[in-house]
Image (tube, rainbow, N blue to C red; front, side):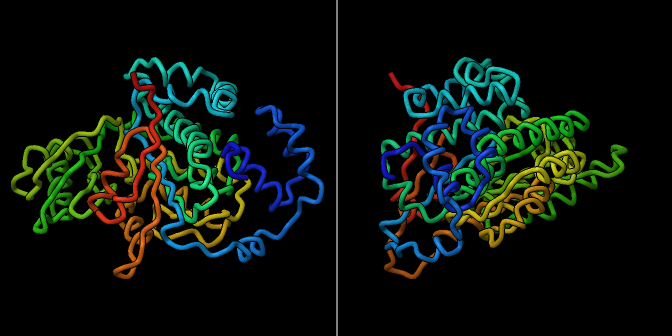
Length: 380
């Protein structure tokens, strides 16, 4: 199926391997104009997915690909401008308009930035733009889709990875991201909090820094202060999140804690910490309604840094992700560690931005040499 659109590829492969009922498939297809194609594929569609996976031919490392999806914070006004000519991208944004209730494409293309950057908007925007970039990947690098063996996504990007891997329908995932973003926005608005990107040294004691920041917050009368490592990015690269008073304390005392560089992130909450606990229940409720399937390629989990073994694990781990640190550095090691002299796969980042590529370069320079960013911006 090289050269066909990614969304078609993932959906068709899922229909062929999962045994979905025709009515369910036709409802999804009506949003993308694919009814005739799907009708012709539904005949004899029920096939054992595990049996198919076992019969996939082995690929050499250099002939394999890894596809990565970014998370919140990568958004920029103008993203998706280079993607509208690719198959299904406009239909994807039209579906988003119906699901979200607002024009996401216009927001991506024209902003304003302060609206796009709000959690409730940027999570769907990054999710959809990343999958639209995968449409471009499918057209421009068809072998990259056919030869993909691993995918992973940072935070909300994990939903894009699940869609790419055929584990979740696009529309269902979009609706889940909508609820996730709304719940996290509400939790963020309840408590002044933030996230601080830090680069330390081998001597940096991150746990000690967080503990002292929490103790400082208690002196200000904050009863249950939170200051935790929220993201493991690369060696000595972390994101620390919590009450804003704790974040400001770390910025002022960066030298004391051997923090070589600190930068306040343009987000409105302390994601992946206990401050997101109010968002867990509404998000878990929507997760219960999703129809997870065994992925067709390996998908790595943010919570434990390991690949998912069973579809039954998705619901619980995606809910835990809201209040657990993202173990991206661990995922990078798990994907790219290999014996000396072994070739590395090609890696594609689905845009916007090159943040995941930058972190890969620090984690594994040899793997990064086979890295490509799929640009989502129209360049002059």
